[in-house]
Image (cartoon, rainbow, N blue to C red):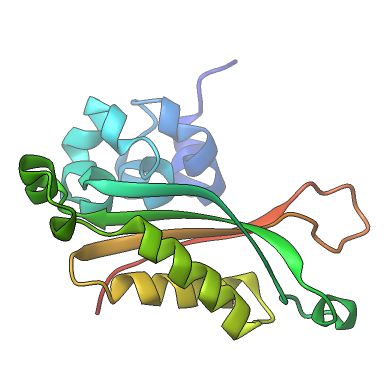
Length: 179
C-alpha cells in the first residue's frame, strides 16, 4: 500500500480519518487537529498522544464499556417501521474516574452498569423515536446525568435497516459531555 500523500491529507477531511491515522508524517497540522483521525488511536499511539491526545479527556479517560445490549423497540421514520418493534444493538462507553472503585473494591464508587442497562432498555421502550440519532441523544443525556460520568459515547445499531440494498446494519455513534 503506498504511503499517504500528506498534501492530500491536509486538504481532504476524509483522507485524514482513513489514511493519515497510520502515517505519522501525514499527521501534520490538519491531521493532528482532526479528532476523526486521532480519536480511535490516541490511547495506543505515543506519537499521536504526544501531540493532541494527551489533552483529549475522552481518549485518555477510564471507561466502562457495554457492548451489544440487544433491545427491540419501535423506531424509524417509515410507516411500516412504526407498526412493530425492531431489533437494535447498543454499545456504550461511560467515561468516569474508576480509580476510587479500583482502589476500594466498593460498588458505590463506580457506575452500576446493570442499572444503566435497565435504564437504556426503558428509554428504548418509552421514547419510540423516529431516528437513531434521537435515541442515541436520549441515552447519552441519561448517562451524562450520572454524577461521576465525564463523557458518554453511544452507538445505536439498527440490525435490519429498511433499505433495498444488501446492507447488514446501520448505526450512529455520538459522544456527549455533561453540561
